[in-house]
Structures are given as structure tokens and as C-alpha cells.
Length: 64
Image (cartoon, rainbow, N blue to C red; front, side):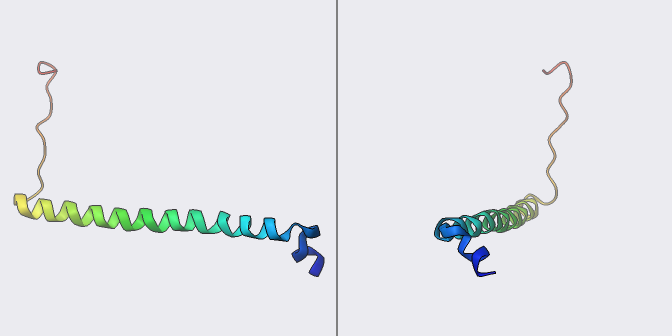
């Protein structure tokens, strides 16, 4: 088992790469979720300010 963790002398390079391959996607996911929640709160606040959901009028083919 010690040989596995030693990685043939390359453990100093291999284990940090494993750690980064876990930490970076995890941090990205956490950041994405936090940003989504922040944007959702902003949308709710803007809709409250506007007195309800604001929708744009559909574009007719003549206006394009």
C-alpha cells in the first residue's frame, strides 16, 4: 500500500494534481450555484420594483 501512495517517486507531482482536479470543479460548482442564487434574488427584487413580471411584447414579422 505504501508503494501506491509513493507512486514510484512521483507522489509529489501526482497527489497535488489529484487534489486540484477535485478542488477546481468543486469550487466552480459552488461559485455557479451562488451566482445563480444571487441572480435569482436580483430578478425577484427587480420584478417586485416593477410591480410584477415584466414581459416584452412579441415581435411581429413586420417589425423585424
